[in-house]
Length: 95
Image (cartoon, rainbow, N blue to C red; front, side, top):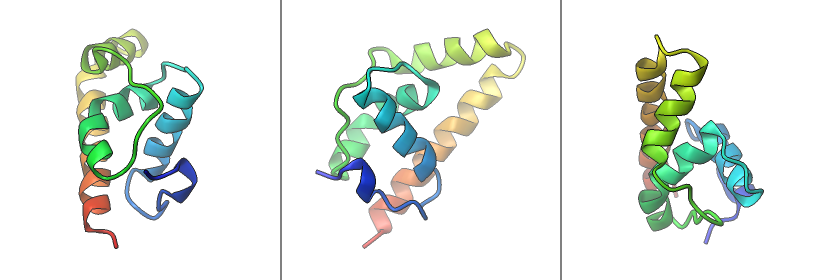
């Protein structure tokens, strides 16, 4: 299991993943925590195991983004998912 401190911060999106893990560990439902919850199955296979996950993270993430700015929620959601996938792919290739 990878601890938060051992995540390679040079990987794209690592800052967001680290923040999400810290938020989940502290029981905070943030955008970053929801994103990590979405990526939990693949992150778990990489050895990155959050303390818990948020239920229905896709819906809740979109709702949180729409509450801030409904006009850009869809593009923000897609951008966050791309950052998650970019991190996961880079982590799979990292030594």
